[in-house]
Image 1 (cartoon, rainbow over the protein chains, first blue to last red):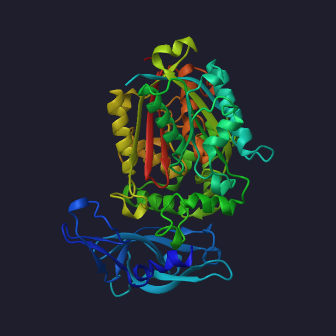
Image 2 (tube, rainbow over the protein chains, first blue to last red):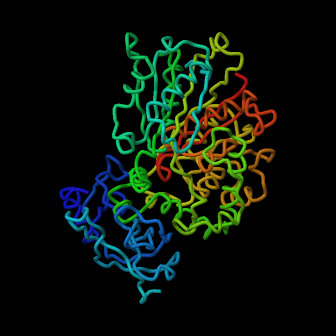
Image 3 (cartoon, chains in turn blue, yellow):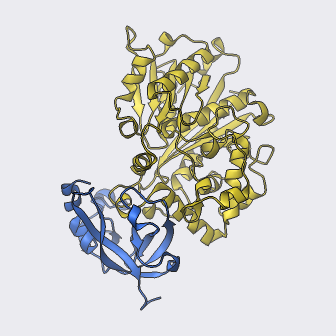
Length: 133
Length: 390
C-alpha cells in the first residue's frame, strides 16, 4: 500500500475514528461518507469510538496472507464495538484463548510493512479485556 | 424482451496447464462453443468475457479486445467484445450481460465466455490477487485471506447451528465423487471424510480439502433468440431467469454473517422471473469456493432451512440421485475454480445435464437447472435458471 494511501486513513486506524449519522444515530467504523440507511437525507460527522468491543466470529489463520507469514498462526476476528459497528482486526493473545463473545480492548500495534525498505504500517489490534471477561 | 436460448457450449479441461497460455485456453473454449452451436464465427454480434484479474495473473488487461483478436473476430469483422469483472462472479455477470443484449433485441448471436489463467504466478501471488476481491483497506490490511473470511463464516455457522467439521468435509467428499465422473475436472480422485479432516489446517475450521484450488481454465457458450434457436440446434436450452444482487464488500458489515443476502436476493429475483420455486429445480451448480459456501448456498437459495445445510449434505440429499443434486460437475472444489471462468462453467454443466449429455453423472429426467455464482465473500451474487422446455 502506498504511503499516501495509508497516511490518509491514519487517524481512523490509530485512534478508531469513524463516522456517525446525525439523522438516524447510526455509527460507522470503518468510516462512510454516505449513510446507507438515510442516503441523501443523512448527516455524517466524524466520531471517535471508545475502543472496547467483543468478538463476533474469528478464525485462526495458519496459511498467512502475503506479508503476514511471520505472524502465523494468528487470530483474525470480526469485532463489534460497544457503539455497534463491526470491523475486521486481529486478536493478539494465545490463539487458543479466543472465543465468540469474548470481550476485547484495543492496542496500538504494527500491522505490516511495504517490503524490506518501505514504510511500516501501524494500527489497532485487540487483546482480551479481562476486566469484562 | 425476447426469450433467449443457449445453442452451444464448451469447457476446456480445468487444471494446472503449464504448456498453455491465457489466450490458448480461451480461444479453445470460444471455438468449441461456436462449433457446438453450428453457427460460423462471423455471425456473432458481440462477446462478453468474464475475467477477474488478468492484470495480476498474467499482467494483461484489455482482455475483451485480446480475445476478439485471437478468436479471429477483429480482422475485417471488428466484433464488439466486452470484459466483465466482479471477482469470482465475473463469468456469471458476463452471461447476464450477454442475455440482456439478446433479450433486448440489440444483438442476436452473442458469446458469453469466462477465463482465468492462475498458475503463471506463484500460489502466494495468486492468493494475493484473489484477496483483492475483499476490502483491501479494511480486511486485507489486517491479514485477512479468503479462506480466513469463509472460516469466520464457518465458525459462526458452527456456533449458531451446530454444524460440524464432518458435515463440511461431506461437501468435499461428495464434490470429489462427482468430479471423478467429469472428464474436465482438475481432481478426479475420490476422497474420504478422514482425508479432509487430516489435511492441513488453512484457517480454522477450514482444512486445505475444504478449499477450492487454483486453476487454469476457460468456458464459453453461444446465445441466440429463442425464436430462431432451432435453426442451429435440436436441443436449445432456454434461459428462464438471470438475476444479480449486491451486498457489502466487507464480511464484517453483513446483516448476518452466515447468510449471503446477495444470494438470497438474486435467488428470489430469479425464482420470480422464472415463476418457479426451489421445488421446481432438478439440479443446481452452487459457488462452493469453500465447503461452508456450499452449505450457505443451499440454505440461501431455499433448498433447505437455514442451519440445516450441513445435515442435508451429510444425509446424502445433495448427491446425484438425492433430493436436489448439487454440483454435479464436481463444483469449484473438485472441478476447479478458474475464477473468471467458473460462472460460465456452471452454465455449461447445467446445459449438458439438461441436454442429457452428462454420461455417468447425468441427473435422470433433468428439466430445470440453476447456477449460483458468488463474488468475494458474498458482495456479488448471480443466479440463473435454465430449462429444457421453453
